Length: 168
Image 1 (cartoon, rainbow, N blue to C red):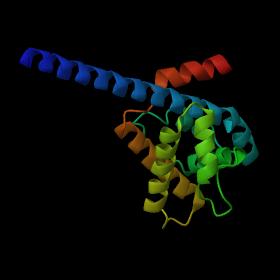
Image 2: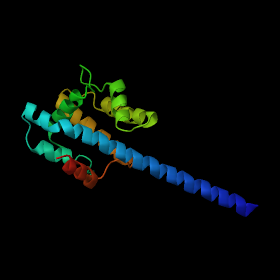
Image 3: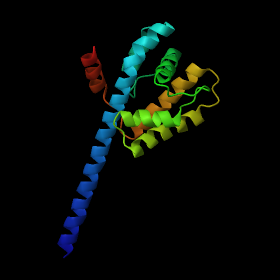
Image 4: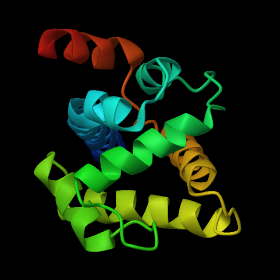
């Protein structure tokens, strides 16, 4: 009897772990798809805003935790890309409903979409005192990246670059 209970408990733990791994993998896939979605308008924003080539390097290294994002132009580029997808409001805040739908259109279920929007909202609150919009968006993006890494949802650089290269 005790052996049967131990076996059931063990199997429940294995199943729980498998489901957690599946959620992390699917979340990484969603973030990769969202990143690729943004990359489709990056060149357009770079041209429109006359941004330096350093922005491209920042974008491709965005998910690398050890990569320092310090270029304010990257914040401007993110703001431009978000505007292209109609994800920001007139007062430069995330449009929660549209961001939720954007996440869902890239494979997120309702819970993951809510969680992603919630993470960005938390980061917006933390950095609401910054008056320069490009700097504020850069700090929000860095905060979001840190939170995504904390969840182990960040796509790997290799996967993102492979996708970018197949798009070119």
